[in-house]
Image (cartoon, rainbow, N blue to C red):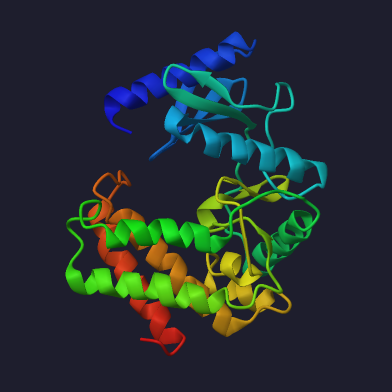
Length: 280
């Protein structure tokens, strides 16, 4: 968010928690992108503040969290002291979560795979209307194919992303027998190492598809510890995942920090992933 919008988001998060009876002496900005994550102290609440245009996404994320908490999924939970819902203040949608003290050590691939296995098992117990991963791919494809939305994307790279998103996702989704509810983006930034063990965050990307689509977001070595995973399918899903990531970075309106670097890096990762599954 831009500085003026960030200030309003911080105040909205602070005021919402205060009105709910929580003590807020300070606010620490943990992450600032299209939405803001704030640590409120000393009440130790993590506030996720999104523009009100993303209200439906915030409500979906809260609903996913509520249902997964009931089946003991390894996830960061909503604050149990409060109503588990989305609050609207100013022009923002605000959800309030438990803050977990981080552990600085890196999560080993075997522990990462174990957390994902348990998370997938919990997701199979949840009856939830969620989009298929190809619906998210279609959204990325619209950004790539619309030159007004992505005017700076070079023609050759536009064709690369379009072909990867269109053809490879169609091939992956041809057989949906093994599809299930997924996290959607369980990359290392969305798996916290805490004193309670690894916990997943950022559930708004929850979708349906093969477990390999989730594994493609994790470090390479994780799939080796996930029983039954198809390595070739993981590589194909990884190519699609990086193509989606690249599509968002080339949007005119994208606000990701260091966007120019990630525009180039994303395209390089797409090509590398295609090479690994023999489609380069």
